[in-house]
Each structure stands twice: as C-alpha cells, then as structure tokens.
Image (cartoon, rainbow, N blue to C red; front, side, top):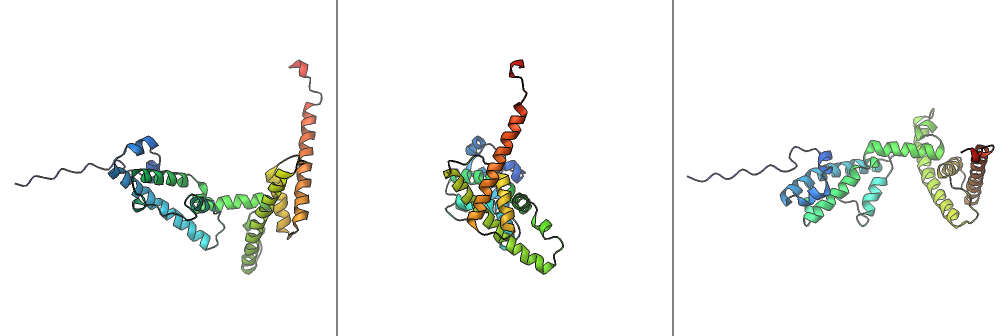
Length: 232
C-alpha cells in the first residue's frame, strides 16, 4: 500500500490581505522560508502592479493627477518603472527588497488615482488659489478642455519659475525671508494671468518675500512691546 504524501504546511501569509503582509516586520520577513516569502511577494506584487497600471492609465488619459509615485519608482529603478514579481527576484534578499519597495509605494497617498487627484487639487489651490474645476466654472465643454490644456502648461511653468526663484534665493545674500507657500502662490497667479517675463516674476517673488518678512517682524515687535520680562 502506497504511503500517503504528507500534507504541505499552509503558507505563513495564508489568508492575509496585502496590507497585513506589508505590515510584517523586516526581521520576520528575513526569517521566512523562500516558499513563504515567494507567496508573500506574489500577493503584494499583484496588487502593486495593478495600482501602478491604473495610475499610468490615468496619466496617459491626461487626468489631473500628480506623477510623484511614478517618478519615484522610476528614479529608484534606473529610470524605468518596475514590474514587481517573483520572476524579477534572484534570491530571498531581492524578494525582501521588493516587498520593502512595495510597502513604501503603498504608503504614498499619490500612488492611488484618487490620492493623486487629491494632491493635484491641493497643489493647484496652492499655486492658483483654486482648483481647475473652480477656475473653469461656467465654461462650455470646449472652452473648459482648452483651458485645462493651458492650465497644465502653466502649472508646469509655475514650478519651473519657482525652482529658479529658489536657486536665486540660495545665492542671494540679501534674501531675508522664505515663506514658500505664499511666494509660490504669487508666482502661480502671475503665470495664470499669462505673465512669462522671468525678471518680472523674480522681482515680484522677492518683493513679496521682503514684505512677508517685514510683516512677521512687525507682528513679533507688537507681541513683545510692553512685555515685562522681569515679571517672568
């Protein structure tokens, strides 16, 4: 009579969700067998690859989403967005590293389409004082589509000018104050109105910076005027 084959032990991650697997501590991951680690990676890689594809599709369709997660993945993988999976892992160490990368991706709000949309709206409000939907309120469908195309270019242009402002700020020994959000908003509103002159934009940003500094100093002086330090 043939001997019965012993039943295989259940996988360590059997029944776990993607979130639960990604919460496994590094020391436990490293102590897992290659069989269990392989199953863990298969589960989280499938979910991560789906999330990446959905985000890439949104970008291809010109949806108003930030590209932070895709750019981060590209930068950490020699300029290419990776495909996660057991086939891409040559050993246990490589499996653990993939799971660590997926955990970082999973914790990024910008890695989901809804999160990337929310972050983009928050940045538009920071740059222009309103979201694209608010700015385009009342426009016809055709006008709104053309406006969104212009806004995408002006969004990128605003960040370009702001980065130049930061470079100038770092070199300028007379720079007094750095209130980034307010300065960024000033640059954004100028670009939104069609301003393209770099010198005018830099002058406005530095003038705003100086005014903000002076306002802050005045507030501090008012707080301390009449304060009796000896009574403390």
